[in-house]
Image (cartoon, rainbow, N blue to C red):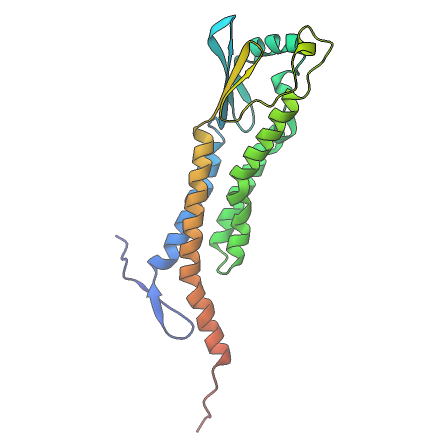
Length: 223
């Protein structure tokens, strides 16, 4: 059984609990794990409401693929002169898995960095949910501003941006967007990483301070 009272001796001779150093490492590793797990879960979803489909048409957006009623939605969008769903975010989906795995590896690298650079390594993972939302908004903006005026209904519809969250109406169609469990898991990962960085600083700043004290200490003359 792990003894939480095990002590670590700092460079100046002071001591701290070993648990103080294990906790931030465990939190950073947990954050990395949560990010990787989120790859396998939907981040966002959209439901299209149309008179022809009273139950609605649903699409789940993962970081690397789309699942759901894309064929039916693409058929409806054809009359609006809008591109097929799969055209949006192709680059992002192609690099998403390796990108998130890299974010996780950077967090793991922070376990072995015992200074402020650990926060720098964690910064991309912390910013990831914000980048995802910004990129999703841009994709939706381009999607709703690519209407072909020569299509059957394109000339009667003004350019629009489907909402990321909530309900938007275009002619006789409506879209309802919402975040899904993968995105919320990424947010939890960010929270865990931030807490881990706080404990990281609390653990390793005294080590850095002890080293500085050792450097600046006036040597005692030998007798």
